[in-house]
Amino acid sequence: MKRALVLSLICVIGLGFSSLAASLTGSWDTDVTIDPQQTNFNDAIGLTSNITVNYMVGDWTFTSLTKLTDAGWTGQEFSTAGVLGAFSLSSKLIFDPTGPAFTSWNTVAGVSIAGVSFGADFTLEPDITTLVLTAGGKAGDVSVDGTLTLGGAEGCNFDFSGIDITVGFPFCCADISATISFDCTGFEKIVFSTTGIAVPALPWLTLDADLTFTVDSKTLSISPNVDFGDIACFDVTIDIDSSGGTMAPLSIGDFQITGIGLTCTIGGVKFEGYSTFDTENLYLDKYWEYYKISTTDEACCGPFGFDLGFYFLDKGSALFDVGLIDANMTLKVATQFTFNMGLKVDVETSAFTQWTVGFLVEW
Image (tube, rainbow, N blue to C red; front, side, top):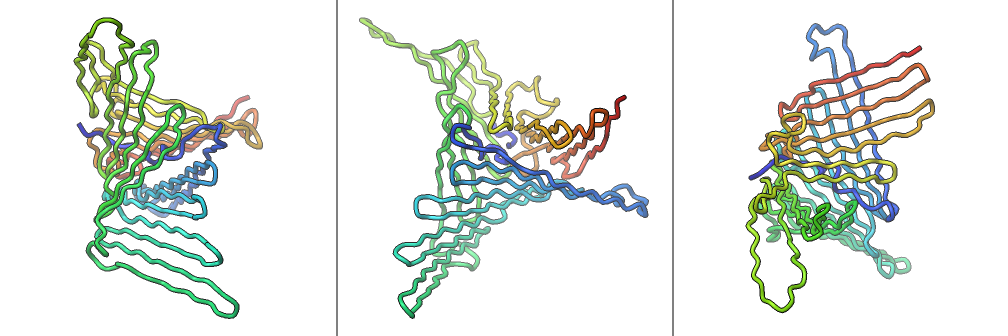
């Protein structure tokens, strides 16, 4: 059964081991405009908020940019830049959350060999594919540059039908394989897979998990692996009656697994991800899954705290089935004064729902 989505994808793509010199950073840039001349409250308050999450590991940086306004969740971008051998690579994937719909994917690669530079610029929009190949070099007083453009008109160009890209990376305590797929019309899906998830106090049981994102849905499926150990002398046939799979409780006989979660800290930033298959135990009474990052640090005047959460519905109407975006911050300016601000966007209704600004004075 299909379920709601996580950006992760908005937060998930950039997580890894701190031993790999990884860091998780970001920013929350918010501007609020108040027009006292307006009699309608919705017209009197204007809000623009950009949430940026950066994950840096080695020579690579993965970035998520979430755009919020008083109209709701209005933009979502994912980008990456880094080096692979002698190649420099950058890529940007853009979605329209209000559709929800895929907007565009652009990837640029470059390399210099023996004084000759080569470049490739690939752009995919719905039913429009463009590939620009460049080469250039100089010998003495002579310079040569060339550009070859393929595609750019409507329809699948230069027989392009699709592409699959698989990336392996560490995710807290597990190794993750991510496969992103595109067809002629644009983004098709991204699948995160892991194997060998240990179950506490059950050394004979491990789990495999697949997390699949499409533009308008998210699917989580888990499957068991049972190790019965070595069998000596006799040939024994053993069968396990199990059911479940895609967004349903995993049942092994009378034994059920109704949820899965992950918590880890990367460079002082805490990541949490939880999923539940129990409809009577939903988060905030309606969300089956959430991802959250949070941090507490010392500012110039006192402790600073921040958390950002993405909550997911079952069969929601928004991009990746995200149902709620919740961001909060606190800053202790002085011993007696603490400032706080919070922002909630109900993505299901495509509306900015709550903005809170407050302070606490103690004496």
